[in-house]
Length: 567
Figure 1 (cartoon, rainbow, N blue to C red):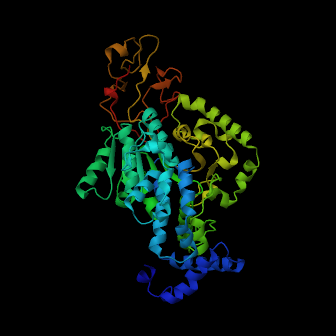
Figure 2: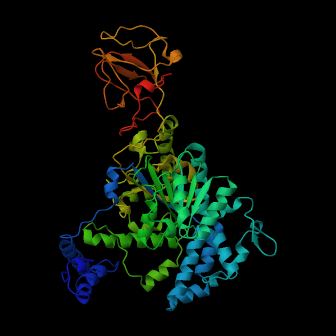
Figure 3: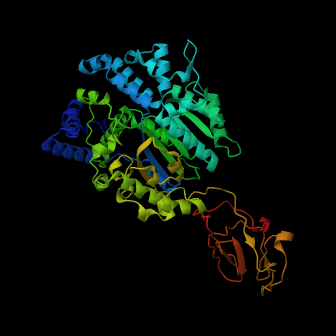
């Protein structure tokens, strides 16, 4: 594109690769020398200075000025015992060892990688792959013996699910099941579940059917004519849809699923653009609620390594924009990297966090395990009292618990989505700024990264206006005249509209907002304990929100004062 707009500005292809591409990539390798790193920074700066003279780039960062706040959570989930047995069995099989030691065909290695990624989602996918004899199962020939017999029936080995116990065979699926249960019981939020595999979507659908969650599904088999209808139905607040199952390949781009404000990326993709596009489906124009994005990764497995590659590619993309992050992962997949893909670190909280050598968390790592757990328990207890009385969305700053969090649990400024080192680091889910996730995490969650993207508008959790009681003694009202003479009349019985007369002029039906425009000669003060208001003749309006009620910082939908019901 650069050569198309300005032919010859970067030289020919050979010159570009020799002068820019090779030094920049070489300097980003983990084993690069100081001279190579210095040359890489120098060439990337030179390249950026040239192309930025005629390239205007706009990212979704601009959306934060017009959308509600968003919090991104990278959740590391431990494998279950069954998954661990299958994982170790596969990576130590003869076929995988041969693939690592010899240069096999790329298609065969990719089949092995896909098999491991499916195993991280749920062992059921491996069982189906073995039964069908698909490529990539050569390391799982005798793995049927690992599966619990109560999950299958008959000689054909058909799947029964063990009366819903199949959910507990996967760490990520178990966390997801609890998350859906808490969302359904405690909130009116809707959620989008995204996966790269239709087999995983099948498991999501089975979970929804068993627990009677209304759901919609969009994948590659969905016709073009039906796709927009599904989107419209999910975005319609009058419908009782709860879950939207989405294939990242089929619906990752172009869809606005603003009916939901929570999204789960159940498995990572090699291409970071695919995941970023899919994650943006709910954080779009028209969204009114605070948005939560969950990235599920299995701890110490290939999924963490794939996510590290994503961060590396994102960092390489920032070279031209001069927004480089401290990434030590190279861009080329060497044989050493290939061997690392087929390794399993079972006893780590997060391989990504461990490779960071995080200075902020080093002091926390040196503390005894019991002390760390007690500290986090006290932190969440301090927040629980506020959460019980008001809908804070789990944010520690709003709950007044920010001072109780350790420094490593707070994000540093407003970091980029690729700069995990500046995100909040949570050894325990009790300090994660998300009340629903705190209740859903369980022992399967080993580590969480969190990053809050501040929005300019505070979302309105409910568009229904609260009913405010106007009372002064037993019976009060405002009678319309210039002197504002007070006479008693029961508003609760007659349910008449509020009227005011200013300079012998009767207010007609108005669309002014009580939050933005002052009412003439009226002062409304709300008591925090009872939501009762006293009306006094003043020149301005003062509204003190009660506990549990948060005034929006955006203009509400216009409504007529004459048609308000005050009870």
